[in-house]
Length: 300
Length: 102
Image (cartoon, rainbow over all chains, first blue to last red; front, top):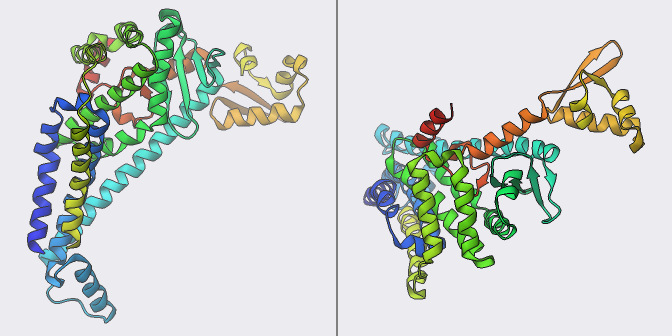
């Protein structure tokens, strides 16, 4: 069991730092954003399981050959009113520290979710009073502001918003492309896809790999939404919309922003060949295997 | 809400109802809507003797500015509250952006 704990620790550290950093630089992900997002979720889940699990497994290792057996021993001896003698201070501290990290992560995730829901409700209340429904597209609202901006408010009661500036600056076909992009964010609940990585980033902001993961996942959901939008409209319409809205956004003054924008435009125009189906299946199998390894190590 | 924004000062529920006279709303309807707006912190109510006066918490322009701020400030740590057409901006870059805008 001590060996399993060591394995979990190594796996957790590798996933949180070099693996995340390396994977965020991979180039094939732009050819299969959905597969890449699955791998990211697997990295997040497996990393969390490993880092929280390693201390618990090490802490309980003197009590049995596997985690279920050790927990059984602990409960049995506790019920008999005895403190297991082999369960010394070092092991106890290791177990408690791990549980602490796990609780902290869940707490951050929970508070973040509550804060998000509150911010959204406030935003939605204001929208419902201020924005007027757009007759051309049901479910879309127009906010009267000259700055072109398009966004959606995810959640059970979602809203799609375009500013008057967007309707002013874009051709109708381009507006449709933008709406298709936003609808795909809403339909596939991309807000939930990014949430765990935002929580990891907030729990351990000092780990550079977490920041890389957060940025990479944010880029991938945009690629995915671009793919859906490009399917439903002409790619050049989407590119036109990106150029107009991106060029007038205040963030256009930042080089990183324009770089990201150009990368997206380049990707839509050149339309990279999707990965061959065998590779796509391989990616998904890898994602499942990644979660399976720490699960097996925990239970064995 | 439009009536309150158009008014120069505070209004009572009765005054709101009178300015919407062409819609023939019942007093209770007006009160319900005002209560809802109050809960959503869009209006504040002050008591003056027996009458309740309602006043918007901010102008229409201020509220639109707040929405646009939310929409343009691509902070991922603002909890993925919005998904924007242009994606979000990493934190250190956002600080630079804020300096540029100020």
